[in-house]
Length: 79
Image 1: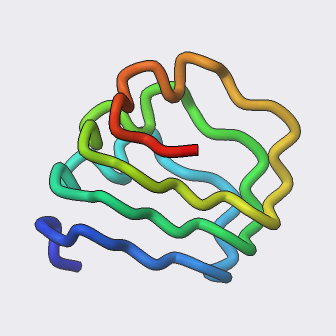
Image 2: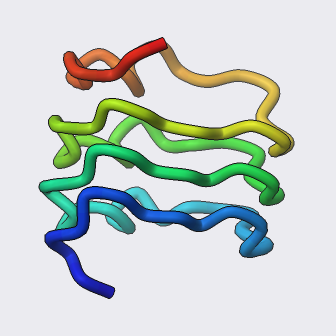
């Protein structure tokens, strides 16, 4: 995978958990699609190196709650 990618599509990959360091090297990432997986929670440090992230798609997962600090450093994130 090209770590300088600006878009990453992981829709329907059967992902159930995300390692907190999974996206560390994707520093240019603007759009991340994680829709239609089995994700139940996301560690608050998961996107710490993705400060350029503008879109984070998490639809159709099993997430019941997210820590508000997960998004605190993502100043470019759009609703």
